[in-house]
Amino acid sequence: GHGLAINSNASNNFTSMYMGADDSVDAAYIQSAGRNNSFTTKKLLLNPNGGNVGIGTSSPSDLLTVTNSGTGDAALRLQTTTGGDPTIIFNSSASNRSGLIKYQDNGTNMGRIEYVHNGDRIAFQAGSATGETMSIKNGAVGIVNTSPQADFHIGSTQSVHSDFTSAFGSSKF
Image (cartoon, rainbow, N blue to C red; front, side, top):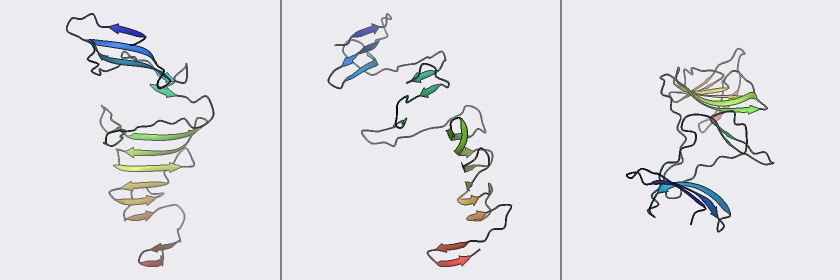
């Protein structure tokens, strides 16, 4: 049984919320499910009218803030058990928006991976708060160049001399 069950009053809506503890897995739970022993899974909404949600914090700063207040990594895991691909989807209801994964060190931007819609490219930036270090656009790679004009394009304010080794041998460029 469940420690607590909250049932819908609607005669045609068979949704309940169950809260309890399961000693066999040493965990507590919250589950939204169908009533009358059907246990059909139902949606569980957190703050459906807005507000931030925190895990490991009492003062979430964003829609979802996950904090590890102890030592070790703060990790998020997407895992499938019966096949399928774990997927993160970035979607905006506004047009011409970008998707961004950002790394900060004590609040200072240090790196990012970004899909740049205005330019249709993937941008990589490391080591500073501004400037891209690598860009991929239409199968071409740009180093310090956001619009590569060749398969491998190095662009900078300094002249570039480098040895290049490939499966076809070495050359200088």
